[in-house]
Image (cartoon, rainbow, N blue to C red; front, side, top):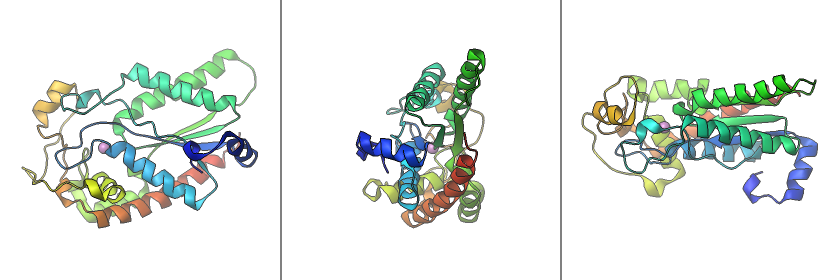
Length: 248
Ligand code: NI
């Protein structure tokens, strides 16, 4: 069930069967010359929507803006500061806690979110610890969809080292499968983008002039995207079931 298409009595009924929710989280940032700016939000959203057809699980609204300051040298990118994203995560979790949700599973599409979301979890758990008492703190998990074992095996098979680390052919393929009307036919020079560390936005644009890092998204295709989505759904079902088995 998708939260945004549900009415509140349906959510109240759902809570009698499960107190877990999946919240897709991504980013709004450049993904090279042929990747969609919404890629990091589109991918976990597509996976979560498939999941909701497979099992009784509530899917929250996608948090489509993340921590992407290093992409601000490219037009169209929008970022929260780490402190802003931390506050957003805390408020989302605490809102859900009010209604009795015990397990919040963030299905993530953006590596730049990891440090901050993990820090937000620590902040939430610290709040419980400092408050004392014996209530179980919320169960929280951040899962990067692109690191699941089936997805990793498939991206290795399809792209090898050309997967790279930003604007990857895996994520571009998945986003194209979700939105075939947005496929962009652009030639990439060089085919394989340079690699290196990420710092601030100006440095990023100097080092990675077309926005990609280490990838060749020229290998992307809608057909690959379908296969990657199927692998990601299998990975996520398995991981989510493990997560909810840890009962509050
Ligand atoms: Ni991405």
